[in-house]
Amino acid sequence: MSRSAPVAPTCASVLLALALTACTGGVRGTPGGSGVDDPYFPKSGNGGYDVTHYDLNLAYAPDTHRLTATATLTARAAQDLSAFDLDLQGLDVGKVTVDGEAARWNRAGQELTVRPAEDLGEGETFRVTVRYSGTPETLTDPDGSEEGWLPTEDGGVLALGEPTGSMAWFPGNHHPSDKAAYDIAVTVPQGLEAVSNGELTDERSRGGRTTYTWHTGEPMASYVATLAIGDYDIRRSTTPAGLPVYVAVDPTRAEASRKVLARIPEILAWAEDAFGPYPFSSTGAIVDRDGDTGYALETQNRPFFPGVPDTALLVHELAHQWYGNSVTPKTWQDMWLNEGFATYAEWLWAEDHGGDSAQETFDALYDHGEDTYEDLWTFPPAEPPDAAHISDSPVYQRGAMVLHKIRQTVGDDAFRAIIRGWAAAHRHGNADTADFTAYVEKRAPAEDFGGVWEEWLYGEGKPGRR
Image (cartoon, rainbow, N blue to C red; front, side, top):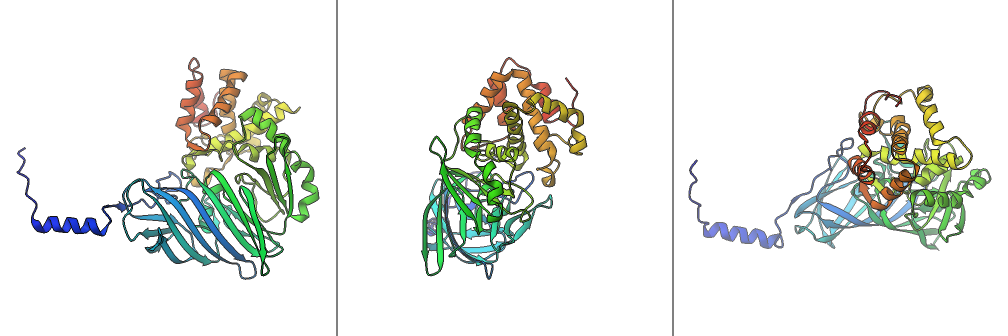
């Protein structure tokens, strides 16, 4: 094939290129993606940038159910950007600025597309501020459960975000692969509490309203950000190691929950021995009355419970602070890395506290598990069939069974080293199933894990007994 000679640029084309460059501040960007191609939630998250900090200033009026808010996101451009998207479901946007300059924007479903006055260069740090208001929505997950902004029986609200509900109350990059620090200021009528993640850094009342300011310094995925507004009994303490404990309990559940919540320091001390140093700067719990939601959630620092938890559930949600909150999945396909680990933590707790051994729990589940979990053998833990099944029993129970098969393969001491090392290797980061299998094989190179991966992690149906 012959190649024609290059055409010399004309004066007009050179002048046009110079003009375009001047108008864009020297950057010729392209729009960031309107999703990150998650296999189960392809619209979640956005391409082209990484958020490092959320500054949320929220005011909520329970009598009108109206939220008035300003969100400022500090982010770093991962490419030359002419536009980028934020996830925001519902709510009315009033104004958007980028680095203090008014930006054009438009809405399409959950996508808020922002066009800065000047293109952003790759590696550039920028701040986008969104002023918005309205009545936040309650969203329904593919599995039928409710999330997002949840009104409670006492006139308050709960904000719960797994997997996508956080976009119902603030704009952001709502995918677990993008974690950030948070500062959340919440103004409510005086007499109500506003509880969130991290540490309460300020509480001020003025003109019949109280503003609570919360700070989360460690990276947090948006789906474990939370807000609970209502009437709560607040208990503050510290663990023997000096870790702050902040517990908020619905007054109707205060006395019934006192004994189990008093075990938080004990459980954390046990978990540190099993999993390594606690990854966050505070701990605690939010206990609501039964009926407002149908599930517990590992909200960071402060797990949420719909009623008084038993010890096993408390162990499960606290174990998530290591597995799920600190080591966060890269995509929603990797949920078993959250739930399998937290479920196995329940087995280990029972084994260490006079209950069944993990082997006895495994055997009972293998022999009779389908009596309790009808779908136990319907799909492998690493490959849920769709978004409606990422929280089904194969992800939890069979996920825990995968971990036990690893333990059987390498022995107790090596297994403990693996689960501690995994939490340390990806502390405050993201990881997927391929990262985990590679890590296990590297830590135990003399062992053959082919059967564990092929039959238990990815295999269809009920594996053989061996």
